[in-house]
Every structure is written in C-alpha cells, then in structure tokens.
Amino acid sequence: MNINALARQLEDKIVELWDWVKDHVKETLITVGVLFVLLIAVAIFTSSGSRYAPDSELNYLVAISRYATGDTTASIQTFLKLVETQPKSPEAKRSLFYLGHYNLQKGALEEAERYFKRFLDSGLDDPFMKASAYNGLATIAVDKREYDRAISYLKKAEELNPFETYKAYYEYRMMKIYELKGENDKALEVAENFVEKYKEHPLFSEVSEEMRFLKGVKYVHEGSTLD
Image (cartoon, rainbow, N blue to C red; front, side, top):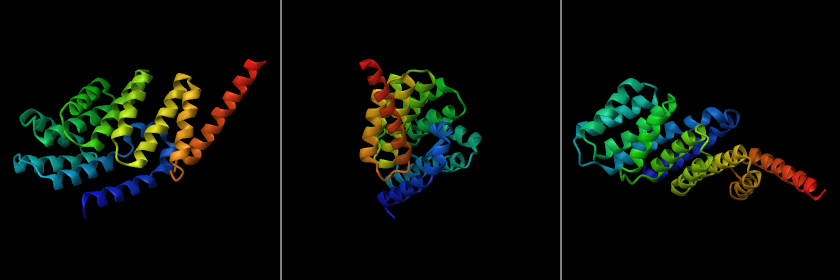
C-alpha cells in the first residue's frame, strides 16, 4: 500500500472520531489526531529511508510505537538521545516534534513551545508534522491569551496540512478563538467560510448552528445601534 492510500485511510478514520470530538472539544485541542500523526509519520519515515545508522531508525520506530500506546518513559528517553547524538538526522528532527507534544500534554508549555519551534527550524520537509506543530503552538498561545498569535499559527497549519479534515478543524478553532476575543464579525466570517467549504464534515451542523447564533447577535447589535 502506498503512502497516499494509507494516509487516505487514516483520514477516513479521523472523520469517525468527530462525534466524540464535538462533545469533548477542550480535551481534544491537544490530543485529537495524535495516533494518526504517529502512524502517518511511521509510514512516511519507512518509505523515505535514512542515511543514518539502522539502529537509530529502529530505535525511533520503537519509540513511536511506545509513545502511541502511552509508554512515554522509554520513548522520551529515546527521542532525547536521538536529538543529542544525531541532531541532523531525520529521526532526531521528528523526535523534536514528539518532545514538544509530550510536554504540551503534561502542561509544560514553555518546554513544548521550545521543542515545537526547534522542530520547525530543523528544515525537515514534512508538511503534516509542521502543521501539527503549529497547531500545538496555537494551543500554547491560547493558554497565554495571545489570541492573534494563535490565529496566525492556525492559518499556517491550515496552509500546510494536506488533509481537509484537519483544515476544517483549524478553521473551527479559529472561529472559537475569535469568539474568545469578542470579535464576533470575524468569527462569523470564518463560520460562513467553513459552512461553504466543508458541507460533508462532521462538525458542519455545529458550525452552522454557531453561524446562526452569530448572525443573530449581529442583527441585535445592528438593530440597537439603529435605535
């Protein structure tokens, strides 16, 4: 099976998760799609090859497998060792991403931000992983109430990510952030764009409802202004 076919299957699986996602948005901001990031990373890695030591390749793949199943102690040690001993290798560069994700999950936001930025500066050509790193940085920015920065990160993530499911999710997040900022007009604009582009998406009904609400708020505000 080639990488595109595998990625498409994984994207289909992601869609199946959205019913749960809609009811658990806050928890999902950090964790959604992580397993699929891991699986796609493995597929891309194993097909692309590496000019570095076979042992490091094997250790990296074992670390990913352990990380995906919750065994973070051993996997994080392997990621750190790869970063320290072979910093220019693809395995080490990808390890930076997982170190960022790990720290984000445990709430060490400064460390997470540092690793995500190191990963993005590493030069690794992996649009999907880069988009996921920007999404992680957006989560950190929201926690710091740096909403403009969060939106900027999500726009970069949307531009990079090749999968429509994720692009829609980033737009959904942007809508929510604009609402946090109190910029309902911009939130409405994003919602309208979402509804136009992603009619088959599992979040379509929720965003449509939010769009109607935002239109109602706008109507009431404009009406009160006219009075």
